[in-house]
Image 1 (cartoon, rainbow, N blue to C red):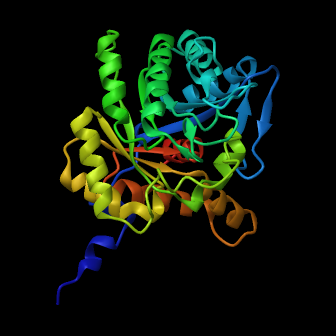
Image 2 (tube, one colour):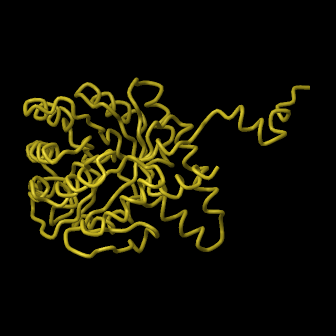
Image 3 (spheres, rainbow, N blue to C red):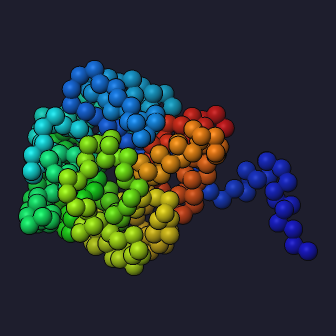
Length: 321
């Protein structure tokens, strides 16, 4: 009889033959920076996650350094919004200032700028509105402006998240033209129109004021289209491809890993985080164990990078293991 259980007998042998290994180096931690002063505001639907003003952000940066998290992705909450999201390419905007602040205070932290418009528009959609829908090509023009502004501020990487056709090519061309040829792009190449984003919209004040985002984000039922989107972004110059959300789309992560030769990221989104936290608070699950199991499943499916609100807790767990 074949006895696979021989290799499960003791903890030491289980660790020795373990196929998938999580590391603190896998994690990117999202930071929400709000314009204003003396702000540290917990997001009600995301326990343990806060919005900070720049004068309070150092306490978060110090914690990240202490536990070994070296990568962040920044989201901004500006005081003023308009129909085109012009604050997103203001060189004195909140994310631009955030990048500069982090580079001054913690130069070793790798700083990724999310490049989109939903936090900056008064309607909450990801671009310029024409005829009650986002106009793709007019939005690309503003995306170029935002990209250059973030690059000038000192971002280490740009991450376009709006799912506009041609977004990576537009950014790559303008970045190269302006001399930012070394600045990488991590594209939200496969971003589904998901119900799992709800808490993020509270975090970033980015809920759409009308309709939804199904004309530009992907249908959750589609799989082949994901590979098409990813390949288009690769052709346009993406350095890293992201799948968002994570847990319900691990088959997509695996497909991209098998069919491409670039790093694959996945975003463990706000709804996934909130559900786990809510169930753990009720005592229905072991939150820590489920967190680690969920993150391991993303790595096992093929993710090289995991953007997650669990990053700090998971890092502490890994550091103590």
